[in-house]
Length: 525
Image 1 (tube, rainbow, N blue to C red):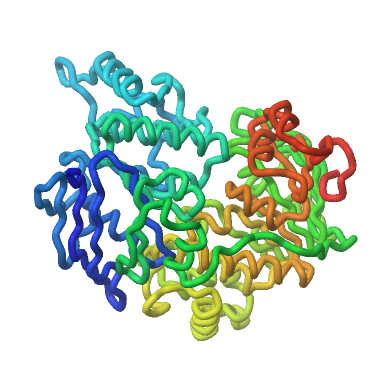
Image 2: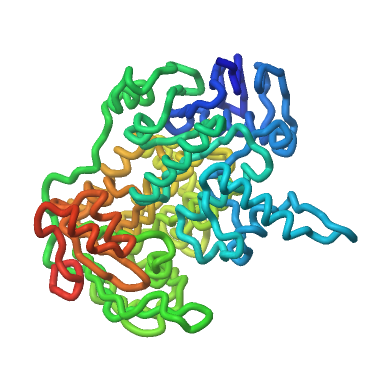
């Protein structure tokens, strides 16, 4: 079989760290090849080298047998390589067609864009690969799985024969994962080569033809799925068994930590994106908020932390009304926050780690000494976070953008947990981190829960949501539509409720796992 990709002896060094150390990777034409490894194992660096975003210090790359060396992504695209990033690169106010052709516009006379030709080419691509999209839909109107389909079409439109997918299932619910895998198999059948990064090992075993494992920047194994289990892969990656988010005992108290009554938030067109939402989170309780992205959970979180204006209703933190309080007051009163987008909301990428460790807490010890910022205290706390949360970095003076995505996430989680919040708002706290780091985050949440911290958990990882939560509430079209018992619900049932398919969920249910949202269920009022 002809090799689509052959990387030999790839080495990439950064100050104080070797990201890739003599890495070898061979990918056959027309196969689905997974790359797994813990955070900092070198996966992202290797993909950036392959896509021309970085240059290797040593080693050779061959594409379809020909040695290449890219100095930019444009050169990689010219050689038929396309990359779908974990964070979608789409403009929400533009249509599907406009996003797909952006930067590759076909021109008619007088330099005008030939939209008819573009639409015809898009239809050809969609039909050839079984990827159905409406070119006139606005991106902001699409569900997450549909947006990902647009990202894939965008690289195919440019003639990609090799697709790099970075964490493609990170934000998808089960039925969207099924659809993605169907699309991937159709792409494979059409001769496309797919290289993808994934931390969900059961998914890797389900879809991959071949799996390469990286550890500490080196290639440690290349295996076939029928040769290994998820536990075997976890052992290769991090030297430990596959962790589970399962929580064994309840620590829920009668004291309400966070009480939300009749919360309404309007968008810029005065439409209700949250419509009279009521919810209680008790001390020692984890309430999971399940919903397909775009159904109001971002606005819900924003209203709690103070970035969204509350039109009606109340928010009380341990009895104190905070609906119209400043963000600083809410944070100082004990709200911890792990944001959904670590790079846009959680970090100053060009600032050193010790400055990032202070964000949101800079007016309190150990980051503040009276009215003055305490650089010594900030560095001392950052070193503690680095040690306790295993943030892989040569030192705390490096900038946040020098860390891998998983290590950025661990820095944020460490920053919030070491502040000992009374209520933690955790939006996708383990997105993009390896199984070992996942286990550490789950342990931290469980330990803080046992000490009385209330947690509102938003996660696209439905196993995580079910395993950690004491109660799960479903948000759909700006309303809380159901309360679910984690002990009696499956990920597929939960996915059906998230998409508004209650009848499908009921058919899947073996027992009375669901209560109507209007009924009193402890967590949901």
